[in-house]
Length: 173
Image (tube, rainbow, N blue to C red; front, top):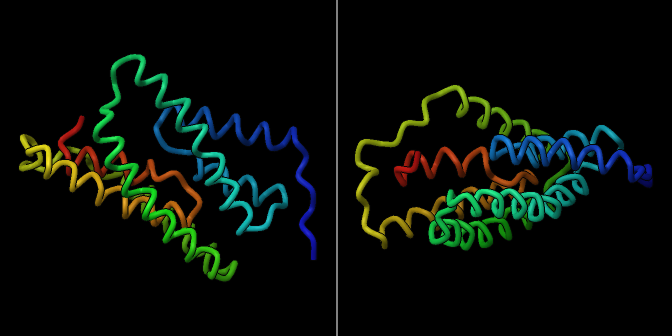
């Protein structure tokens, strides 16, 4: 069975909603995109893959705005990004082998975990301040690997996990 054709104006509206939420809260791209793409008739696997493809320009635009105001730690971003690339390749490979049902359940669990994380405190761990650069870089790559894996499978950008993890493990506020 072929998927229905999604009209361009629906895609623009979906992208606009994802961009507003992603830029405003640092999360929301994939969390908004995947369900909306599925709701307008796109198949689950295609929706997850399309979400991943669209997250890069959304994230880049937000990062540029924050970088211009001096809010971006480029070194940490690169370290997390490198880990994220490797993790997302593994996650996307797994996603291609999952059934639609399994993918739906996995996505629901990612949403549940993100929601629970938003409810609990995001205060840094007591020992997270004053880490040397090598340790901080290793933690950042690890955060990227894990977040990238879940991003690759679920089709989300990882902001729901990256932001709290960098705050808690790297001491960022």
